[in-house]
Amino acid sequence: MTHETSPVKVYIGNLSYDTSVETLRSEFIIFGSLVELAKIPTKNYGFVKFSSMEEAESAVKELNGKKVDGRNIKVEISKPAQDKSQGRRNFTRRPR
Image 1: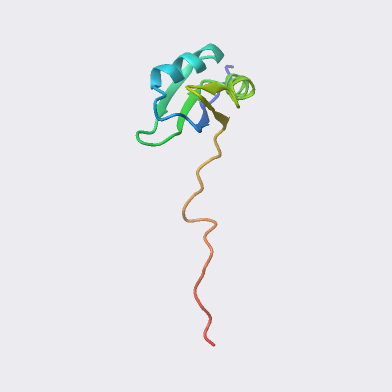
Image 2 (image 1 turned 90 degrees about the vertical axis):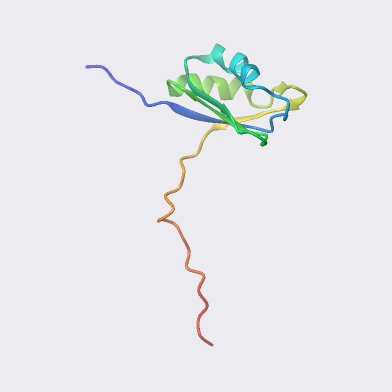
């Protein structure tokens, strides 16, 4: 029986606007198999997906705070997106 793991998404923040996808690939590929890599256009962040949690954790440990293109990048395991139907507060006013 094989144990399949789902890809692990890693957030990359505080990127220079000049940082390219190729630069990110060269920084992250040494930690494992990249399933996906994206830099958000006109923003200073991106995401990378690794094939395992071990690879993602190694990248976070080694790259968080590293200087890339003149900026100390922030690297962390992405938090799951919240379901928009849950966790909403009701801010309606009560009658006086």
